Length: 105
Image (cartoon, helix red, strand yellow):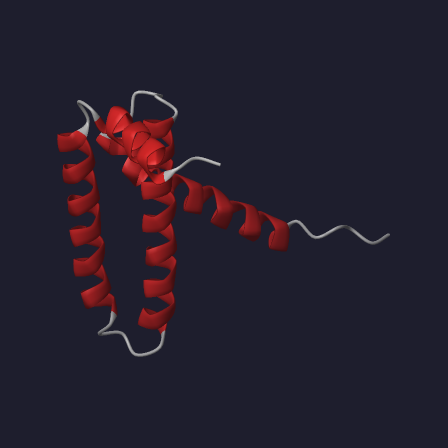
Protein backbone atom coordinates (compact mmCIF):
# COMPACT_ATOMS: atom_id res chain seq x y z
CA UNK A 1 0.00 0.00 0.00
CA UNK A 2 1.33 3.45 -0.93
CA UNK A 3 2.04 5.98 1.76
CA UNK A 4 0.78 9.55 1.54
CA UNK A 5 4.21 10.87 0.61
CA UNK A 6 4.44 8.46 -2.33
CA UNK A 7 0.94 9.36 -3.52
CA UNK A 8 1.72 13.08 -3.31
CA UNK A 9 4.99 12.64 -5.20
CA UNK A 10 3.29 10.60 -7.92
CA UNK A 11 0.45 13.13 -8.26
CA UNK A 12 2.86 16.04 -8.55
CA UNK A 13 4.91 14.24 -11.18
CA UNK A 14 1.75 13.57 -13.21
CA UNK A 15 0.63 17.20 -12.90
CA UNK A 16 4.07 18.61 -13.79
CA UNK A 17 3.56 20.70 -16.91
CA UNK A 18 -0.21 20.12 -16.88
CA UNK A 19 -1.30 22.42 -14.06
CA UNK A 20 -2.74 25.11 -16.32
CA UNK A 21 -4.65 22.59 -18.44
CA UNK A 22 -6.11 20.87 -15.38
CA UNK A 23 -7.16 24.11 -13.71
CA UNK A 24 -8.71 25.64 -16.85
CA UNK A 25 -10.54 22.43 -17.78
CA UNK A 26 -11.86 21.76 -14.28
CA UNK A 27 -13.01 25.30 -13.57
CA UNK A 28 -14.51 26.05 -16.99
CA UNK A 29 -16.51 22.83 -17.27
CA UNK A 30 -17.73 23.14 -13.69
CA UNK A 31 -18.77 26.79 -14.14
CA UNK A 32 -20.64 26.07 -17.39
CA UNK A 33 -22.38 23.10 -15.75
CA UNK A 34 -23.44 25.22 -12.77
CA UNK A 35 -24.83 27.95 -15.05
CA UNK A 36 -26.80 25.37 -17.04
CA UNK A 37 -27.99 23.81 -13.81
CA UNK A 38 -29.26 27.19 -12.62
CA UNK A 39 -31.29 27.60 -15.80
CA UNK A 40 -32.62 24.04 -15.56
CA UNK A 41 -33.82 24.65 -12.01
CA UNK A 42 -36.44 27.01 -13.47
CA UNK A 43 -38.24 24.02 -15.00
CA UNK A 44 -40.59 22.53 -12.39
CA UNK A 45 -40.17 18.74 -12.55
CA UNK A 46 -38.26 18.09 -15.74
CA UNK A 47 -35.48 20.44 -14.60
CA UNK A 48 -34.71 18.21 -11.62
CA UNK A 49 -34.14 15.16 -13.82
CA UNK A 50 -32.17 17.18 -16.37
CA UNK A 51 -29.92 18.47 -13.57
CA UNK A 52 -29.20 14.91 -12.48
CA UNK A 53 -28.38 13.94 -16.07
CA UNK A 54 -26.14 17.01 -16.45
CA UNK A 55 -24.26 16.14 -13.26
CA UNK A 56 -23.63 12.64 -14.57
CA UNK A 57 -22.42 13.95 -17.92
CA UNK A 58 -20.00 16.38 -16.25
CA UNK A 59 -18.73 13.70 -13.86
CA UNK A 60 -18.06 11.25 -16.70
CA UNK A 61 -16.38 13.91 -18.82
CA UNK A 62 -14.05 15.08 -16.08
CA UNK A 63 -13.31 11.47 -15.11
CA UNK A 64 -12.29 10.67 -18.69
CA UNK A 65 -10.09 13.77 -18.75
CA UNK A 66 -8.33 12.83 -15.52
CA UNK A 67 -7.91 9.19 -16.61
CA UNK A 68 -6.23 10.39 -19.80
CA UNK A 69 -4.01 12.60 -17.65
CA UNK A 70 -3.00 9.77 -15.30
CA UNK A 71 -2.48 7.29 -18.15
CA UNK A 72 -0.41 9.89 -20.05
CA UNK A 73 -2.71 9.75 -23.09
CA UNK A 74 -2.09 13.39 -24.04
CA UNK A 75 -5.10 14.91 -22.27
CA UNK A 76 -6.75 17.88 -23.97
CA UNK A 77 -9.62 20.17 -22.99
CA UNK A 78 -12.00 18.27 -25.29
CA UNK A 79 -11.59 15.14 -23.16
CA UNK A 80 -13.58 16.91 -20.45
CA UNK A 81 -16.49 17.18 -22.88
CA UNK A 82 -16.45 13.49 -23.79
CA UNK A 83 -19.17 12.89 -21.22
CA UNK A 84 -21.58 14.26 -23.83
CA UNK A 85 -20.46 11.62 -26.32
CA UNK A 86 -20.82 8.82 -23.78
CA UNK A 87 -24.28 10.00 -22.72
CA UNK A 88 -25.42 10.32 -26.35
CA UNK A 89 -24.30 6.76 -27.09
CA UNK A 90 -26.07 5.54 -23.95
CA UNK A 91 -29.30 7.33 -24.91
CA UNK A 92 -29.11 5.92 -28.43
CA UNK A 93 -28.69 2.42 -27.00
CA UNK A 94 -31.69 2.81 -24.70
CA UNK A 95 -33.92 4.22 -27.44
CA UNK A 96 -32.86 1.55 -29.93
CA UNK A 97 -33.43 -1.17 -27.34
CA UNK A 98 -36.96 0.07 -26.73
CA UNK A 99 -37.78 0.46 -30.43
CA UNK A 100 -36.24 -2.77 -31.64
CA UNK A 101 -38.37 -5.20 -29.68
CA UNK A 102 -37.98 -8.87 -30.56
CA UNK A 103 -40.50 -9.95 -33.14
CA UNK A 104 -42.87 -12.62 -31.88
CA UNK A 105 -44.02 -14.95 -34.62
